[in-house]
Length: 172
Ligand code: S3P
Image (cartoon, rainbow, N blue to C red; front, side, top):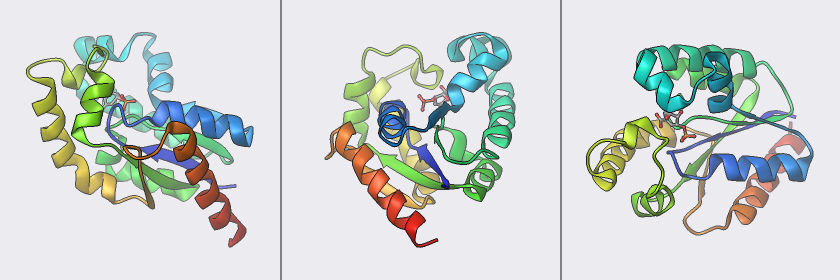
């Protein structure tokens, strides 16, 4: 089976929905943020602080190079992965990319007490979310399927992705 690759903004539910899909299909979940954390042995926040975003992105791409070679897994990506066309190209080789859409308002609701996202730390959270989300939307839209998480529970979003994916697989 081709990999199920989940993309979307921070707080769009990639990890939660990824876990549900992996459980339901009894396959492995790879989380690119967790892989980067393992490489540095420090939190994302600390990586940004000590090494900077550029270094984080380099290691993130190295992780993508490695995990995109796998098959039959769910890959939950960090919210900035799709900004690099090389990452998208690699992930598409063995996978189908699902964009988890969430509105700025629901992202704020989900992340209002979160302080683990370095890109949303300074200034007004909602305006940072709106600015980044607008800038990134064309990159997220360049995926294979879009799932609106504002109108679906994580459970239903997971089921929808599974049914799209299995239907697509049966036609291969
Ligand atoms: C980022 C999203 C984060 C993490 C890092 C940068 C981004 O992952 O990779 O803080 O650029 O959107 P999540 O989307 O899992 O929060």
